[in-house]
Length: 351
Ligand code: SF4
Image: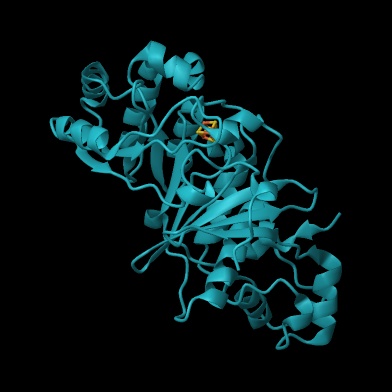
């Protein structure tokens, strides 16, 4: 089987056996891949035909295929993408003023079984390959280029789609190395966020490896018994170990930590929840993001009302860290946090 060209660092790509090829040919190829989002060697017309043939013989150029494209009322776009083995994954493009954020998937399904998350209900089917993760970015970038009037590029990347990125850390870290390479997208590490449910060895590995990205941790409760129920990973890596890992990350990395907290009424919005949260975050330098829960069909939890969120946020002002209430995007196409799953077959295609 041929290696997919989108899974390789520029220095790993060999153009042909001809050592006399000018060096600029590789940059021409990379421009087609990462600036034009072109995955067809036959269309790379400034490359000699022998080189195009050689590339087709050496590498696969297959990208995920857009199966569904759903546009939410807030203009977020959810892509249902079909992979070569028929698996369907989802990614969500979120426009906000001049920002274009892509929320990408790292696995087909997820083993971590958080009780509020649709992806967790699928269980883990497999890890995504490097080129399948980068493919989501190329496909969304091409879509932006074709649908927006001005030349607009992706500005932010968040690994918050399907799957736990630190359960596929080897591939995810290599994706970041490729995307941040000066000859590909030169994607800004400060605009890249990797979100984990709290895989402690992965957080330590990320801090030690020098991988450049911001870290988000989905916390959702600082009461151990409650977090056990919401996020079974808490039984494997309890809050005390998670806190040590976060302090370690802060010492080793210059990148910011954000703690994410999904607001679920009747579950984690009481005064005792806030007090436990305050004790947990005490000396961690971080930001706190609160996100109103978005129910998927058959969810056992409900969304908070705006009054419930306002009341909670008023009390959360007593926390010493910066706190924000994040608006959910794409909820009416099940594209918001915790809603991603292969729903595509039951839904309408936009446009
Ligand atoms: S919230 Fe994240 S880690 Fe938890 S089940 Fe869903 S995808 Fe997996």
